[in-house]
Length: 328
Ligand SMILES: [Zn+2]
Image 1 (cartoon, rainbow, N blue to C red):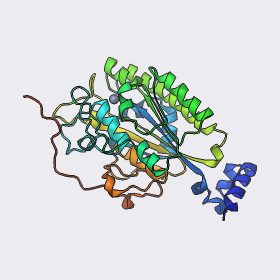
Image 2: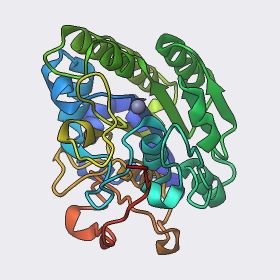
Image 3: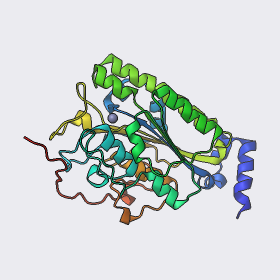
Image 4: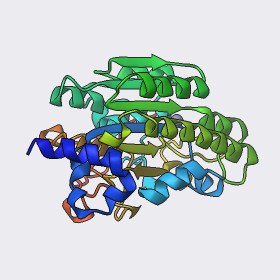
């Protein structure tokens, strides 16, 4: 049994991946590859604007993989939860909503309680030898990145991309998170809207950066022996010049996109409601981590062949929860 993967790898090199992919004998080969995850977080990117922009790299990832342009960053029961960056990224990366992870807003209560850790921490518990890295452009996110060998803040998106490419080229990360902020900045400066040219231009510039990162993944010397899952999502949308709606539910703010690309994905639009918290659950599932019900994750694997919609059951929604009591 142990010889077969090595023979397959050898033949893949000789015959090329295209020929191998049409031979049924090699259909199990993907499962034998080394599984890895890249998560690209695009801050403040509305799905309708993303679809309107000439974002060809992200469109290609969606077209070849699983996607939802109607995902949500919060469930309706958390009617008063803040749609700011800290709580939202904490949700994507921990797999639970703010009522569990505790980071409720970016002004008064920046407390990530650690009871529901970053998915990197669960990955390291699963296998301490796996390598994790986080490159972020907003320093507050460093506080939630537990368990990573590399947990770096850089000021500019292009610097984050270059550092990410350096890691992909010279090192061997098993899970890599890259956070890009300039789309959110354009939204705050000019307006979060598909009708704002500057916002669309920022998305298109970001898309080129995503293309550079994806090219670096595919250029890895061992890429033929690796099974990368590339997840791209956003923390929130926006309306006007912002993305917080106290005691309110604004669809343009809560709606987000979710793209999963790679051999493990079931191509096409994902059936059922996708949430931002599914990012962490999907990354862990792809990497072979059994999702323990005791973790009480709100996220479920989304868009993976091994977890088709009937097999994916999201925990029942509790009753409406008020997180933040504000003075009237
Ligand atoms: Zn944000």
